[in-house]
Image (tube, rainbow, N blue to C red; front, side):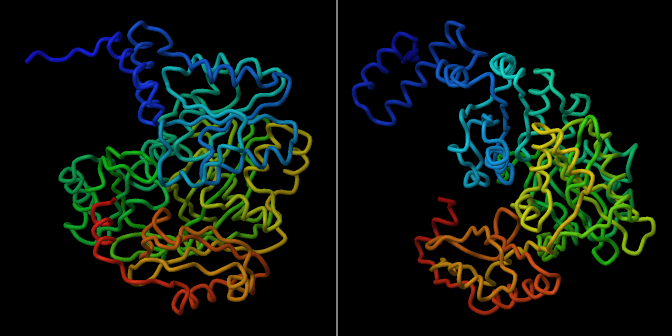
Length: 503
């Protein structure tokens, strides 16, 4: 039987018939047919559709305009914060994938933007052309989350705006390449990248690595896939995540192998900075991480705001370190969320580069920093872009905070089950001395179990207050978790099957 040829004419006929059905599937088919026809005659393959062009054309070229690439996770705060600080601003959202990854979907608010469009590298030139008319009144482009720095660099470069050089653009989404890029300027951790676990194991042995050995996807986030391997079997099992889609919608094609830095010897910090082409690096905040390792999996416990003294040895070390990282990654204008190990008791501080993201800190940290009375990295960045006088005034007295604060990660129940409900806000206030807010992933009727990483855990609680109140809050959360915080029921056979089949 000869193959059926779906000619453009036949597809159009089918589309017209389905048009009268008025069903969602019919509409989807019509769109597919339309795309096929356009590709077939070579029209619009590298241009945005008429609806997107019209939406951008409807915006006022005389108003300042902010373009947010993937306004997800904390990066979603760019739009809301910009509108609060600059009421006349226009905000455009650029989505870097046809489908927003499930791990980030809940954080996307399309109503926060004047226009939403889906990016394609083939359409980069046309997008730059459409945005060109906004430059006279002030056009700036920012990265929202881990998926966006490379596109942000490409777009700012195409528009001739300050941003990130394309010199090391691939390093913005690859831990291994990032470490290589910054190694002339800061200390890095010995490491190599592999897609073959046998080759990786032979290399680790040649370096005389002792267990545990760290294995992590080169482009993951939120501790996803980060494994402290305590045996050869565990080492090979860690490579099972290769080419699997992570919660960001990315697939790692290689794993980074490194020696283990023990929390007994090193403290992990995040250094959040604004990079400005005129003033250089400004510290927005420094955060201290406390993590745990259980069965090889590394997960967060707390993230504490560090109260720094300007000019102190640690402040100067953080500033110098961030300057080196920005230079290595060729970031001239933007933000950096940098993670580093610091050897305990070292003077001057002995710092080692872990990774850096050319986007805001995730997990709701910028508004948390703002709640402590400081100028968070998103606010500082927006001032640097749209109100230079205010920015220059603010950076005269950086990292000043009125309160202490801690983000406490919920660890989850010891046994898995189906959530019956979640505590109300009054219960949180009654149980936690300095309770400020929370971001929960718990939903009644949904499966709940022990936390694994920042994408698969019950959520976080923010406490803001005095140092004593913050300390007491952390203890209160752990006591509540051990008591009756989680209300669960046993899953049914059907629910267990659905989970196993990932339905």
